[in-house]
Image (cartoon, rainbow, N blue to C red):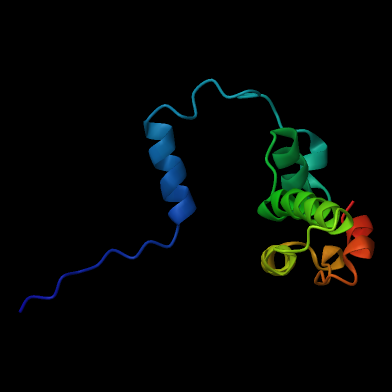
Length: 128
């Protein structure tokens, strides 16, 4: 049996960008042909990426989760205060699943603990 040679791809992002450029995706970009500001070459590269991504409207996954969790906690707290506790344990379990996902993807100083029926009021203020 003849061995098939597999092409090893080490630059997947570069390959995607080259393909995007071939289809005209890089034409007429804002700022094309203009020099980059000097501040782009100083400091932390990751901070520059975050600033540019933020300027372009990109939100990281963990930030989207933060907004979802905040809304779900407020909703669950409202049900608790109204005395509608029938499905609260299930709601809290789902909130905690999202908190776990949030904690895996957010910067460590922003990680938060789980929600319980006993601490939901305190946690609601922590998620604001």
